[in-house]
Image 1 (cartoon, rainbow, N blue to C red):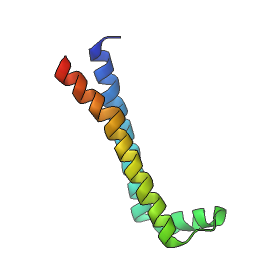
Image 2 (image 1 turned 90 degrees about the vertical axis):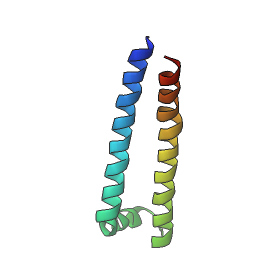
Image 3 (image 1 turned 45 degrees about the horizontal axis):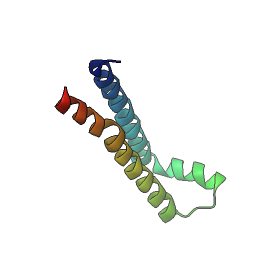
Image 4 (image 1 turned 45 degrees about the vertical axis):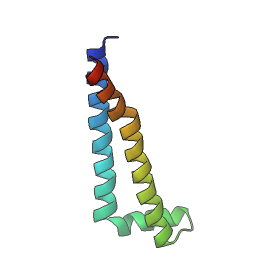
Length: 80
């Protein structure tokens, strides 16, 4: 596999994952009451814990994007 193909793959992966993160954020921001009701049916969770879990999840997802997509892409761009 050539470095150019890997760069394109990482760019598509980065775009897809950021779209997923934006969808998660938009659903969480604009319909958090519905989302809370949905999750509170399955789990006994307070609103504060619900918010904390979602914000932490978004933070870990973004850190994963940086470590698994952006860092290798920048390294490939610097080397090739």
